[in-house]
Image (spheres, rainbow, N blue to C red):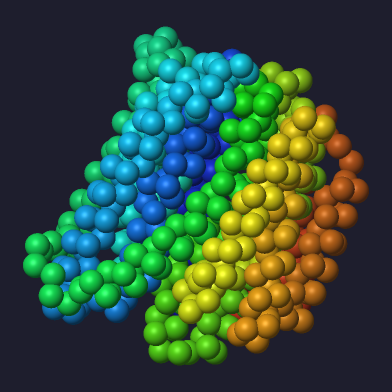
Amino acid sequence: MGIIAKQSVASTLLTYLGVLIGFANFFYFFPAYMSPEQVGLVRTFQDGAMLMVPFIQLGVSQLTLKYYPAYKGQQYYSELISFIFIYFGLSTVFFSLLFWVFNQQVAAYFTQNAAAVVPYLAYMLSLGILLALYQLLVSLAQSLRNIVLPNFLKEVWLRFSTLAGILLFAMQLISFHQFMMFLIAAYFFNLIVLAGYLLKKQVFQFTFQFTFITKNRVKTMLSYALFTFLSASGILIIGKVDSLMVSGMLNLKSNAIYTTAFYIAVLIELPKRAVAQISLPVIASAFERNDMAEIRRVYQKSSLNNLLIGLLIFMGIWCNLDAMYSLIPNTQVYSMGKWVVLIIGLGKLLDMAAGTNGEIIVMSKYYRVNVYLVVLLTLFTVVANYLLIPWYGLEGAALGSSLALLLFNLSKYIFLVAKLNMQPFTRNTLKVLFIGIIAFFTGSWLPDLPSALLDIAFRSMAIIIVFGGLVWWLKPSEDVEALVQKILTFLRKGP
């Protein structure tokens, strides 16, 4: 397996270890020890902070990924690092001032239906700045071809820290407010650890003398950063604005139901995140060499492998969803999000199948096109949610987000076919779809067992056996076949 496959597999395994902890948090500990309103407040707090990140960064992470390969190892490397952090500092100050100016308007949006959010707006800004700086450090780690540590910190350690905070709250050792501060401290710890790793790798090299990065180069870099900022902010708005709009237009209880359902559906796309993270520097390097064959290979492999894994997860979730909801405390409340899972899940599955289309456009000379598409679809998402939430409630928010994903990926697909003559699908894509359909009917036709846990285990095992058997027989993916061969070799030889 190549570096993308190796890093993606390692990162995905860590991610799903974190998923197990996150599953316990969202499906037992949060519903058991916090009210739906408190859960909704936690999710609104986190989603609001995450939504601030691209506006704080103004494209600095994308700028880092774009220019780091060309500057690494050069005598003017320290100039790039210095420019990056000066730019980040100025953008942070600028956003903080804007947030202070419009604080009353933001507070007014939540006052009627989610007044509990208002006292935490200043803390939300603090968390947003922490996340923005952390994401900048993640982009530096990605440029070093290391996504395992950032994903461990985000997906595993952060969820473990959250679990510790919930248990402290459950034992009444800390108040709800102290739990919120505990969350901020957990994010800060991740920042310190990642900074320590980069310090060890001698990434932080600063200078106050700029000889290579001239005014013209700064203009080019800022132009790229600001354009990609629009793209990054739009993508995050598409993914997070529904949560905030549900809180503001409905209430915090509805957001607890919605975000719990969303968390189930988002499990489908976790492998895509790992592939996208490690693919970005590979695609950037390929564009530097004008190696279009390598880019096409990454595009098609990412689509195929993402769809393969995404279908397996989607089938497993949908076939087990009723049993999963029956295990959640306050089942009658949280199970109201069942159809949100289906709608969001289908949107995420489509996004998986689209592969690294956005990454290719962003790293190409056509990066501005991605920005225009994102801006249009961001407006579509906000308007769709504004119209659909009053009409259809939680399902309206899910439908708005999934329609945005459909239009976004369809636009990028058409553009890449027209401009770069590449598209992600092959004959093996049909094999994967066939495998997914057979696995779905297998899971759906099985009889229900009296125990929810036994039913989930039995149904999931049947789906995995059928799915895995068909994958082994039809061999749609070279990477998956190579991984299976390594596992079988390890099992035959022993540890």
